[in-house]
Length: 83
Image (cartoon, rainbow, N blue to C red; front, side, top):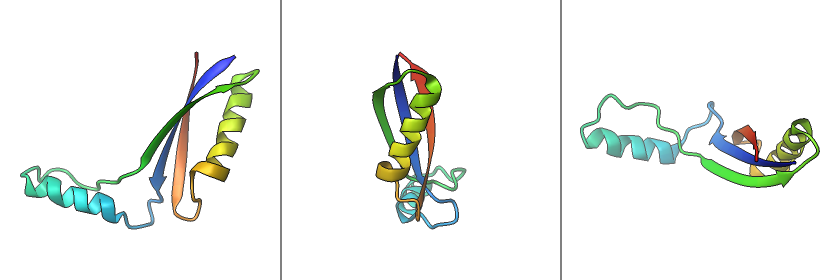
């Protein structure tokens, strides 16, 4: 079976996000004063062939932990859909 994997990578909530802060300041300077806590991350998608959804999740998690993120400063979440 083929699955589409979507990985969202974000800075850890305990860390400052200078890029997010800069974008937040620009948004507020444009008059959108109700916007707060802007965080900037990455969105990665790929397709994977696996025998089951559980196997696809396991493989996608391993790829995310070992390749796509720096666990010292980032966290991730996965979404998987069958194609």
